Length: 249
Ligand SMILES: Nc1ncnc2c1ncn2[C@@H]1O[C@H](COP(=O)(O)OP(=O)(O)OP(=O)(O)O)[C@@H](O)[C@H]1O
Image 1 (cartoon, rainbow, N blue to C red):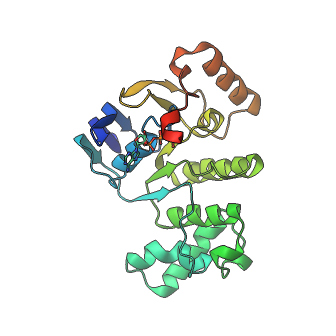
Image 2: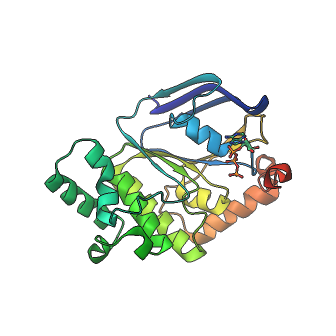
């Protein structure tokens, strides 16, 4: 009864294999963190999973009702206010102005976005506020699945933590499932039920680990200890901090 099922996904760019034989299922209400060394194909895989990129091989079976996506950059419309940005997908869905306004306001409240800022334009908002708008826009469509592609990488540590808590709370309340790409193992351990580790590019999934307890109920000391244990003793995480320098160059 998976809400997302990837079977034998393979992909290549210009003949160079980046993903091979990827099988991955996400259950309803489950938050799966996808981690792996730089350049291993995390973004490619989440784009395939979300239907943005057509895989060269394999199939994607989506059992969710409605999905949303949150990217590293908030990707807001610069000419629209925060409220109109949040309401934009609702407008595309043909929802009337009055209801759009109410639902955008409710979504903003769920991410603790101050109502007085709803009429501001993206350029008038801080990076954290803009990312809140992006999350509110995702929550506003009432999704049962959200794809997160490194949404908090550009934020400083304190803000990142606040945003993670916000996503954890929202996921618990709205019970959406999610695939969450991150290169931050601490973030993965805080936020997810399960961590899936991609191998270096072209080698597929290296393995996965279930995380104990529910996201949001883990003590900081336990999160820290789990990350240390993964990095020091678990061979699955051996390549996690490798950098594909050819790509960086
Ligand atoms: N549109 C594209 N055309 C050609 N090559 C691409 C394209 N997108 C990604 N690649 C290459 O595919 C590989 C995987 O990239 P991808 O962005 O999916 O990895 P990633 O794990 O998300 O990387 P990072 O952790 O650095 O964000 C990289 O070597 C990258 O250079």
